[in-house]
Amino acid sequence: MQYLLLIYENEKRFEKGYPDTEMQEYIAFGKEFGKAIQGGNALQPISSATTVRVRDGKRLTTDGPFAETKEQLGGYYLVEARDLDEAMTMAAKIPAARYGSIEVRPIMKFD
Image 1 (cartoon, one colour):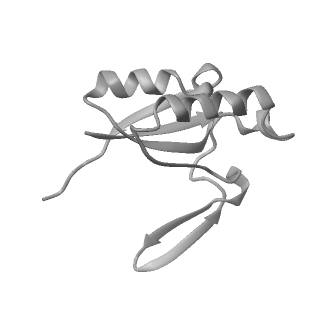
Image 2 (tube, one colour):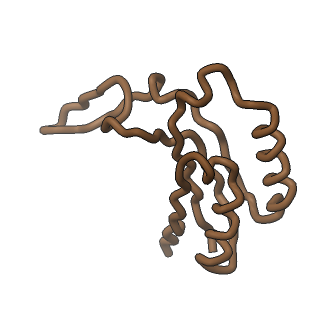
């Protein structure tokens, strides 16, 4: 089954870039779970986001995120796992889990 591992952190931690040691941890995570990882990316800062809504048939856009939060969505991994327990084991090994949170969401399949 596929799961999306959504990585939430306070992006202010990275205003000066990622610490080298943490980048090495992400590389190690990628090696450990390389067969399970089916995709993933880091995201640009929340200041680059645009929120789109349609109301009464008109498109409305807002610069920035949809809501003020202490943690921002910074990236994700799409993984293949046997079950939720295996997906949570992977999520716990993402370096950001120590500073923020990892949301584990099963992918919905449509026939």
